[in-house]
Image (cartoon, rainbow, N blue to C red; front, side, top):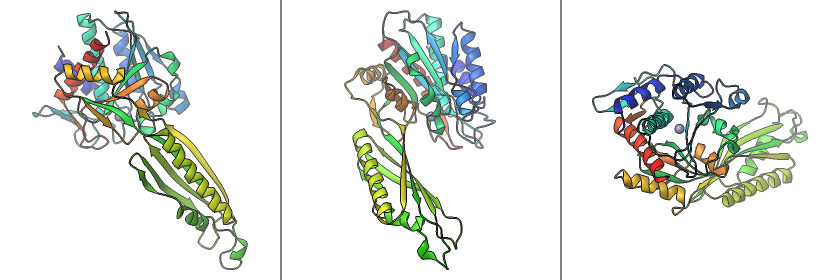
Length: 371
Ligand SMILES: [Zn+2]
């Protein structure tokens, strides 16, 4: 059913079309042409303008042939560096790699290729399907920037699948954390370090004293926090007037995330103020959690589809965010599916042709289960 040669050719064309985060324009052009040749319209939003990139997010809607609820599939168009001038190499072992000097970009172009091939098969075979929505995002690798700007009220789907997990096909990610970016700022008072240090308030020292009272690392089995960057001070002989710490906290539970964030914030502010400085803590929710129940439809449907392919479904949790996090945050139940890409974000990235084929079959099976 899957035209393997056509699929591999499509995948190679996609990975050999440069689309580093913020510069997805060429892949956007490719997709616009691909869909318009098939009489389908591609809508581009203004995320590109806002992010000063070369493309916005793309939305393609395909009218259903059966009267069932619509279904969304999503993937991201951007890749990480080094990702320009990719040359795909198909090995005798039926594995596709880069030449070793760039990433391959199977993350996430394997998903895009699989979606396009699935669309082709549906059209060729006049396969019955519900209304389908395809979302192709930009700047996912830069903190889900594209999907965060997408207007989800444009979608009808209440169930969605992102294909962007590096486990094998058959894996369904039902849990991933929510994350807060936390910036801690201390204002002290500058003074000469040798002549009148007593007139100063050392922001670096205060920050250190406060940090020593704060937890760091693993908080519990589903919650972590970290301090990643510290900066401050102007010169060796000046009492440091300012210090900034960039940190984060994440948890699979929103309640626990809020709890640890509040506790970090309060401890920091109380300590700094007690020591005579001024403190400020800035908190930004980077992405919400994925918390799907195994018995709910989005998971059940994927499980049925996976079993149909002769695979055993695996329910998984991950430690990071994806477009699926943002889609869930928008009120659409969304699972992230394993596509079989390996060693992503390295020049050793690869994908097996058999997994690419399986990804297409999985999309088709999910569509079939949605009818
Ligand atoms: Zn990805």
